[in-house]
Image (tube, rainbow, N blue to C red; front, top):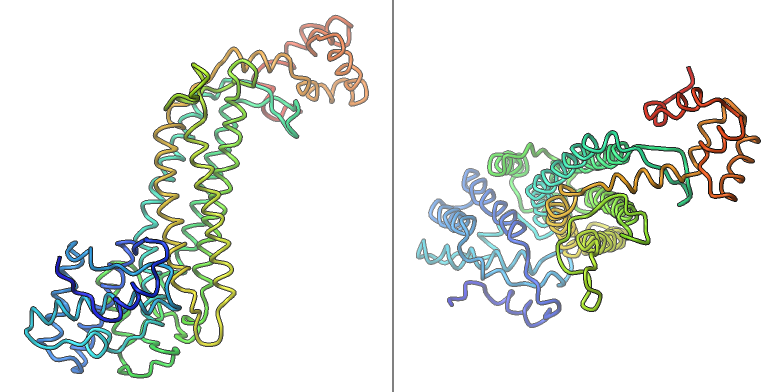
Length: 441
């Protein structure tokens, strides 16, 4: 294998043999797009000669087409700011462009012209997230659609509600799934809102945000060129110094991903409870079997997909905490913790995208209901007694509930047998259409 990277990359490999991980391909392509844009802009500004610019641009196009992927080798855990990432890409482009042009092309003087690691990496993180987020949002849209389908499918399945893990007023299984759909919809809106902040880029700030070593028109032209290359509605951040110091936009997005993770965990916990059993739990729903549940207990079926999803979401929450700490650690003109922020934010999006897709396909889309168990628990629930409050009063209903529990009777039986209300009235009150919607007219 021919090696295209150079001395700075080799130093990074020697200094940071930490995780064995490599940068995400989309992160690489985002930085390469910046290098391509810079070559075009610097050439248009007459500060980078044609032959060198064309060779750099051609090399960038080769990388963007998938070539030289094995040349980007720097560990995510590296020296601050992302200099090793930046130089790895500069060196590969310089050496390959030198082959094409048969000229010496310098990684700093030519490929990195008008740039600094300090403005390249924040811009690259923004562009990377903008490229990755549509896949996550697509998987969430499909998950929401599955919840919607289940809510319609289960719309007439009446069952006991539960609060504090105790019997509560009735609800339909469809209503529960409608709430899950709405939660995912709101989380998608939060993510989209956070993503909107990523369109503001500070490329051209160079070392400290003042734009030193760049042409006065460079920043404006770079924003326009990157907008053309990425097809995103990019715009100037308005203050290039702030763009370099402040990682709040990354933290904001990470926080929204953390909220999505907690939503998924919460919904998953519900589904595990509702499917518990099958003989000693609630067993109101049936999760699809994806593997044997035990190496010792034959026939056991576990909520395996939800368990996997929960572990991933715990990891996403951990990544968010790391991004928070890294954001706090910014000092003066630069936050040097950018490599950690980049890696964790990209991993959050990547893991959630894959996990939501698997959760939907292998679990939610094929959930079934056990109608008999839903009816069984509904008829035994003491929570249903609350619908009688307007007719008999809270204190009297309390006595009825205690009596029903003591003698293992249904609330309905006690009301009729003890003459509190006649059967016709009870039938009207307990009609399914009146149990899960406002009923005071």
